[in-house]
Image 1 (cartoon, rainbow, N blue to C red):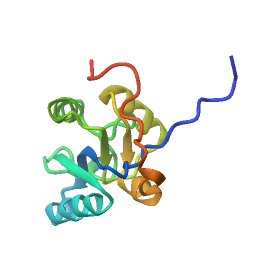
Image 2 (image 1 turned 180 degrees about the vertical axis):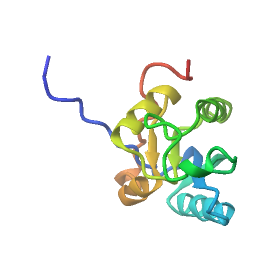
Image 3 (image 1 turned 120 degrees about the horizontal axis):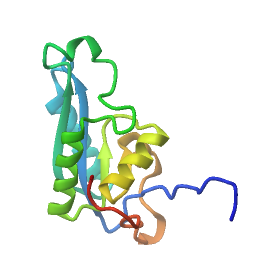
Length: 150
């Protein structure tokens, strides 16, 4: 067994298209989050993806959250646990190939969310930077393991 960490296989939108769930994470100060989500969906569509569902997590909307707006709800998942369950349900219902986050994800968040959601979780900027896979080959659909959060 190798002592090197396993290399992560980056999700790429297949040339033939992929169904994705788009997840936005925005502070309450971000008033134009709906237009940002629409723009992200349009960018994904331009790269061949089909946005099967859109989910938004807003931070700082409640009185208690306003002081912590710059921080993620969870350092492991970025989102609240309830929102992760909502994303998992949307993935199951739409048979999504991946979950694309408008926010940048840390490697830990990417690994944790991929495991919890049962499909690749990636940042929009990373997916668009990689583009589609050459030659129309399919991207890996899902990693083995759990398909929904515990």
